Image 1 (tube, rainbow, N blue to C red):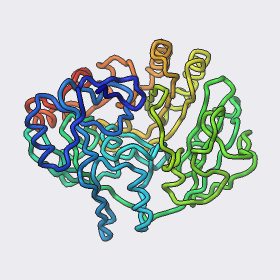
Image 2: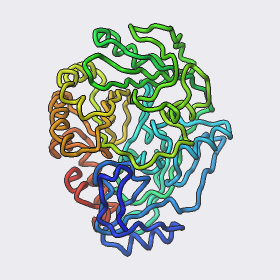
Image 3: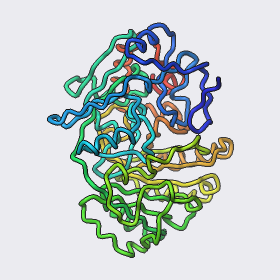
Image 4: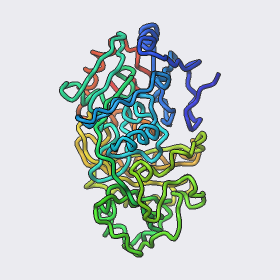
Amino acid sequence: MTVTNWARNVVFQAAHVRRPSSVDELRDIVTGAARVRALGTGHSFNELADTEGELVSVAALPPVAQIDREAATVRVTAGTRYGELATALHEAGFALPNLGSLPHISVGGACATATHGSGRRNGNLATAVSGLELVTGTGDLLTLDRTDDRFPGAVVHLGALGVVTHLTLDLLPTFEISQYVYDDLPAAAVPDCFDEVLDAAYSVSLFTSWSGRGVDQVWVKSSRDGFAAPARWHGASVADGPRHPIASMSPVHCTAQQGLAGPWHERLPHFRLDFTPSSGDELQSEFFVPREAALDAYAALDAIAPLIAPVLQIGEIRTVAADDLWLSPAYGRDSVAFHFTWIADATAVAPVLTAVEHALSPFTPRPHWGKVFSLDPAQVRAAYDRLPDFLRLRADLDRDGRFRNPFTDRYLH
């Protein structure tokens, strides 16, 4: 049976996926295999999860969503999908600080790769993790929390330290979000309002086709931060109906807009939980740059817009708060992330991706670990000050190299 990722651009070398139904069964799989990689929902677009050995999914472990009301935390099975968890949390009166654009991804996979939403004060999804349990290369079950010096190195781990079985996440009281979409932020207005627009609300995303005409859509997700939602805003117009980020597509599967207030988990993602995405006919790349360099990075990309646009479905620009997680692309710096949803043609995309990376190279770009990039491995490694500490941690927890693969061999040494 052929096993692929969500986008079908990666065919995994493993012959099958093991789905243990208990932690003890998982431990036996790990100790019995020469090579093991954990597989989440398959939303990575590169060979991060690939292996010739055993692919392991923890989705069949007994589901857990154990809320500690006094500590305001939840312990959850790593294979749980965010949309399912969010619904249960909201019904119990709690919320997560943020969500990604798609609620169908697993908690364990998203945190392992520092997947994120948007918002000036919002860290990536892994920053909500206050504890994790993982099976190491020796088959031991290790529990780490913020009192352990190794913890910041273990949360964003790229599957290189072991197989995570459960995570504990910090919670907030549940809250509401109102979502507005603005059309056509003019190119001439972008330099003057770039920071103001990105900071206007709890979560803001700029969608651009890199057509040279500016920003196609601004998605503003407002809690109680005083966003007034004017009809005209920096030359953009409030949308007269629901929108999809890609203008040619129906918005029927997008979360509610036009200022209709609703629970956090029904507004922070761009797409609804009851929409089940099929295999994605696309490729994705994303690069994080320091917040203070973001406008210059935008200008550098805009200068090559005629190259980008023909192979692009849509681009998204988001903010991510700094964190202390060693392999997080936002480690130590508030960041702006430039995301590209490409057409599903790797040959056509490759030279454009190289041009994008060259344009961003003066700004020390850090790629999203789970997306397509071609940066020199030495350049990627040099962007992470704590990589040597992570390598020492990996040597301690995976002494026989069970969790190594060609991807980690390129970037983690």
